[in-house]
Image 1 (tube, one colour):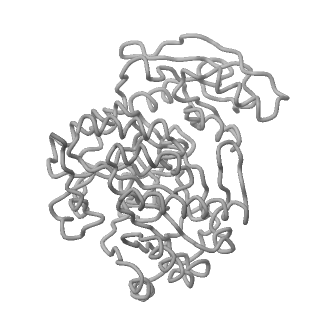
Image 2: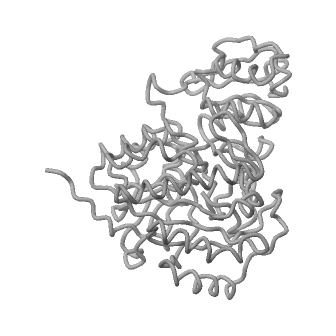
Length: 424
């Protein structure tokens, strides 16, 4: 007998059930395909509640194991979501595999996704077949002249777009995706980040356009000043301004007023998050090695074999490390592709390191970072002993050795209760 999904039991879309129905976010999507001028995903703190951060990353099999343990401890969970910490469709293989496994193992669970919409279109039909019932898209502007002020770049495949061209491409994909989702009968929420002086006077236009597309609910979210971003100095809109904007937007669409700006690894009820309590469970599942489909190794850029102390571009070879019981073992040394090849060098390097889940380096540029991440390899910038870096990757070990959170590892926070951030 086909399982009937109770789609009204999603606490983000139905405020009436927020005290009895919970959600779990599965952090399986580390990469993002756009860069917003308010977004900084470099830092994660367990006291910080905001989209775009997670204390660990899971692969699809680890995510299912985590789901099993979470449901045993919190049976009120009704929704499994993928909200990053990047974008699900910048990581389509990981995201879609996770959805397939969750649907097979937990047929009664609602599945939702949060995305910018850029890479969504090719997956619409499969999402419908897998009974993904709820989608959230972040749409910050419906005028590319305004959108180009918000996005630093948009990456479509291997091509990076900037300026007006980037904003036009993103908006076109978003509008097509929303129309496609509604034609398939899915429930759609739109998040709009309110940025004073940038798009605050544009909110009503966004609401009007989304209403025309039959969007179900609009969630206006105040931007939070985020260090080391172009919008760091823009003040957060106050409660009165947000209330006024919501009142105007409500003339077009129902408003979500109970958003808690969930982390990419949030778990529990919206007002009773159990992320801190279950963080050990999350990190333990992230250490599981589920078999041949996993990337078992870590590459290291090192001069002498003890420290991570080479820039990616300086490395003439990489040490390849793996787990050996309770310790680590040097498995091999592989030559790096020669310099002088332009971007092709980084694609060749990704091929050399194709069975590595991460590469430890002292530093690297944005182009090689994007290419390695595109190929499923997490570049991690750090300084210090190789073993400490390996502990951080394999076991969630001490992270203070790392030079900032890059690719999923943490350095610091803005203090207890901080709610800065970006939107997943």
